[in-house]
Length: 499
Image (tube, rainbow, N blue to C red; front, side, top):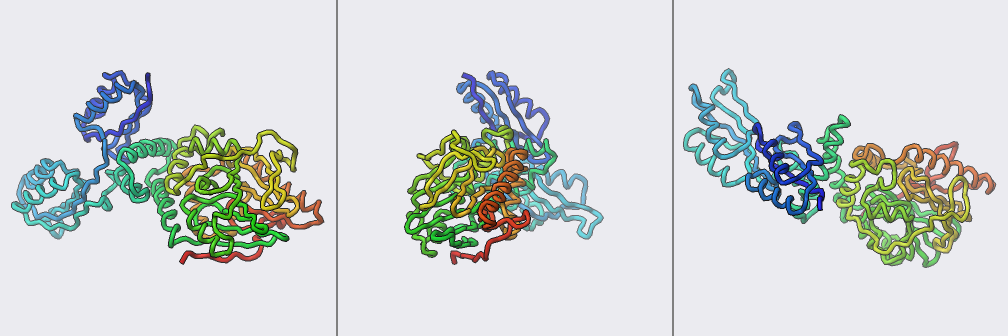
């Protein structure tokens, strides 16, 4: 049976190398579905996807590996920078390069000018996969030339952009802790899809991948001892809402009446332990007190701890699929975008996403209307009546909103956000996400319709309740209320720090 298989090939930078690899794939009956190579990004790495049988795939791999073309593991090259004094005679540089070629070193940088201040001095930067080769090269050079080593790095920290994918893999390994080479190579092949699409869009992959690594680094830096949050504790008449603005990503809301605690949205999985400790310190008893969790949608910053909770977890049936498919654009017009799919995979990895194995789902059939939105269900939320309103699939398929009609509280997911209340760090993280996906909404037209519908709903319920303000609990930012068409923060927020 024909299956799609991938190869990560390490090609020599010489004429005919790519042709030779393609001939091997062809000879074993493989049909190349995708190939990507860009010397501006990485002159040594080529990504293939070929459709063939499993047996033919194994034969191709064996033959590519036999000629040294197949990357089966991620080897971190060493970086060596040194200065060597060459004799002032014809052929001196040629003779020197015989040694680097024999050691199979890739020259990243050469600087030599006989009219300069030091006409005999050559500055050289090399990358080489084998530490033994470096040792042999240095021994051979020291016996013939005056030599000064400026830098020798075996960690991969100082590699230049000619080994872009290896550098990226090394950074991913630091962020993801213990990872196998096979997993990283599969991930690099997926990531390369982003490179291909970004180049087609005229974007610089280097900038985008620096954002990817920064987002993963920010999550690690702000969990554990580095955790902090902005808190708002709002009394809604016999019950309390605790709004927790987590360091990165979306809010989580705790609702309590007596000992009955409901959680709306969970935040990233990486913050679960931090949120548990925060609840204890704030007198909410820890995450074990949560009896019910309700998710607005399936993005990792709103649903990423769901699998860690010992509580009912409720979500829309389409949110179940968004999470199962690991593609935030599932079911939308953007579903085919590789940017959305790979962003979902990476942010899930970075944020320790935990899937709920036994989710409870809201019904698909409407039981009524609230403004422009279908009411799917009426739930009990910490002893309060809560209407589950179905969105239009603008921000994400399956996004729902929660409305407490007696308390006039509306949880809007990511369709309404008080951006002015975000700290600069939170604005920065939100910008990273937008850069990686190009847009945070899977359907901008429907997203605009959702926003207008929510604003109209707020105006309607305030008008029918003698002007009493409706509290807006957005997916990010502070609890707010609507004033002259603008969201205004409700009261003050205070900062919580783990240390």
